[in-house]
Length: 104
Image (tube, rainbow, N blue to C red; front, side, top):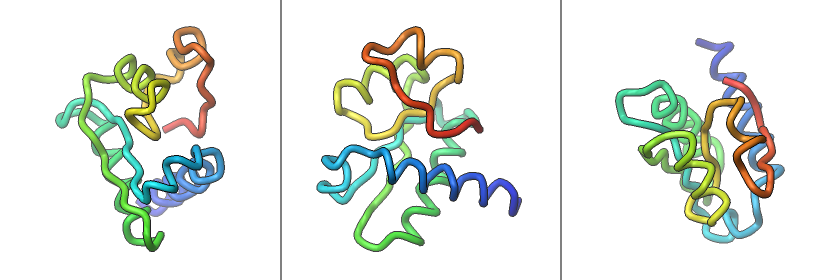
């Protein structure tokens, strides 16, 4: 469990570094995940729990979504700040290409 929390903490630190300034200006981070029954949703909730307890003035919410393609499209369009997706989908599908923050 500690290893997972350290991994999520480092992932969120990376996210904060590359996150658009508009996300920080809103003081809210929306993370697109997957279905409420899936692993991505619980991973997103864990990330938000870390942000909500460790970073003052910023609120994080894990949003259940239809999955990787939805998350990629909505990050590109500005509806989400971060989207969790399958690692082999973000480069060939997204235009412009997205950057990977970490692997889960």
